[in-house]
Structure formats: C-alpha cells, structure tokens
Length: 119
Image (cartoon, rainbow, N blue to C red; front, side, top):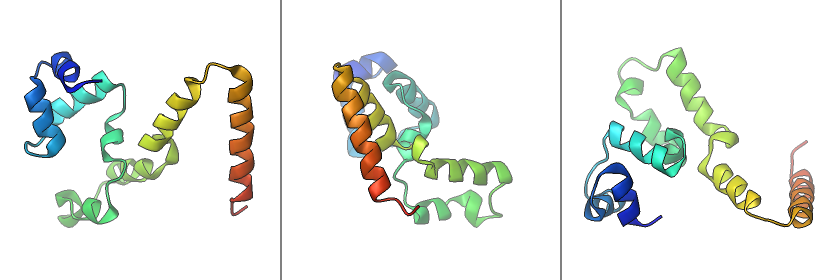
C-alpha cells in the first residue's frame, strides 16, 4: 500500500505518513489504532520487536510494576502466533495458489521444524 493510499484511508496526507515512517512525528494511540485497522493487523504488530529493556523501562513497570493483566499482555506479545513475522508468513503462504505446492511447502516446513526442535 502506498503512503498516499494509507493517508487517504485514515484522513492524512502522504507527507504526514512519511513523518510517521521516518520517526519525525510520534503516532498517537488513536492513530495507531486507525493504522492497525486499515492495514488489517493487531496493535501488537507494531510492538512485535520491542526490546525487553524498552518494555522494562516503561513507567508502569518502573513505578509500581505491572498488573496481572498487563503482565499477561506482555507475555502474549512473546507468543509466536502474535508476531508480525507469523502474520506475514501466513499471508504469503495463502497467496500460493497451487494447492499441491502449498502442501509440499507445509510438509517441508514441518520437517525443518522437527529437525531443529529441542524435543
């Protein structure tokens, strides 16, 4: 999706989208929500690669700790099913039109996963 189309979808100019992309302007919560809806991803998508030290420096963590719900949400972000990489992989997989090729890729991926698992 182009910056122009993304901007149109959430009521901004492509220049504002560029500023967000470059980090010139911060993205507010409501705008992040808008972006997640237009891009068809969860909010967690934007925090997938957040380093643990950044999460540990959050005000909630530094000043009184996290509630049980906040801790569960943080642990959820570590869940592979909530990661951006997983979402991209699944989308790419389902773009493969040939069912036979898709099945072979699936079987190969399972075999590779088994070969490198700790089980």
